[in-house]
Length: 205
Image (tube, rainbow, N blue to C red):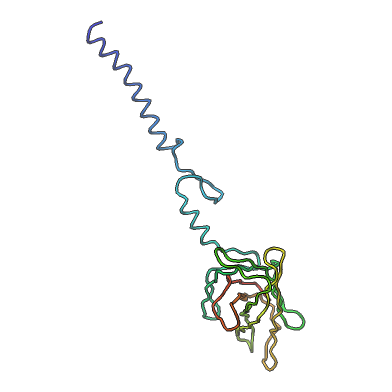
């Protein structure tokens, strides 16, 4: 075989090999196995960029149908920031209503916050309620504090207190039935103003 024939034969072997290699490279840049992992269920992707999923999880507000626990909350032009020492949540996810004695009963469970020294059952803490009332057609806000002892921690324990909303001498209007939000949180004592716990925003009537 002469030199010219050998060159043609080598060209026929090399060109298909190079074309196949380039084809594999192109597929990995399109729909190949090296594509970033995507998902449609909003769970963190297993691979690729998960920053978006992490940001959504960080900004999510826990809660239920009748309650939420935001990091900050504004009521009556005052801004509140959640504490981290204790986490509280409602014993039942239900709309709170005043009883016949015009008292609002708050029942909650609690646990220690992440990385915090936990209080013990029986320890005292301040329970604060910020509650909207109507006086002569105008919404006002009661801030009511109560020193109480924490019940057992976790899912099996319930701490509760009934706040007396009716105040003698004040023309409170209890005839309206619209739903509204009230705010509940724990403080270290009755003097302390900063929340010891997360903020619990409850739907009430």
